[in-house]
Amino acid sequence: MRLLISFALVGAAALALIACNSADNTAPSSRSVTQATPSSSAPVTRATPITAASVPADGVRRITTVELQDLINKGQALVVDVRNQASYDAAHIRGARLIPNTQILDRAKELPRDKTIVTYCS
Image (tube, rainbow, N blue to C red; front, side, top):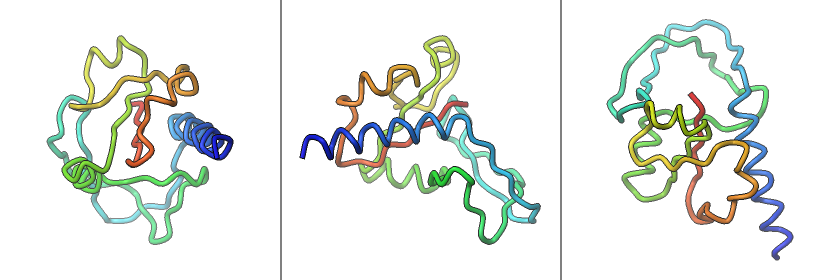
């Protein structure tokens, strides 16, 4: 059982690192997306290229700010800022926990197993 949990945590850490280095290559569309600014949870709407079947090449699930806010309101998500301390101090999502990407594996025990872990790096 411990091996399975350890494997899951290592997988989550790997996904967090991949997400920070991924690039979405999607075809243009007229759909607009709501996005939160780093220093607040106030949404900003902007046009973003999206396809009907847009799945990132890295396979990591993306969520909208509306979905994130809903998960946070229900107590079902933890936001983890994986940038460095200076970037976090400059601006971050309110309530986000700072765990730099270089420390994810060492601090994996701090992450809850009963919540969705949402990482961000910009």
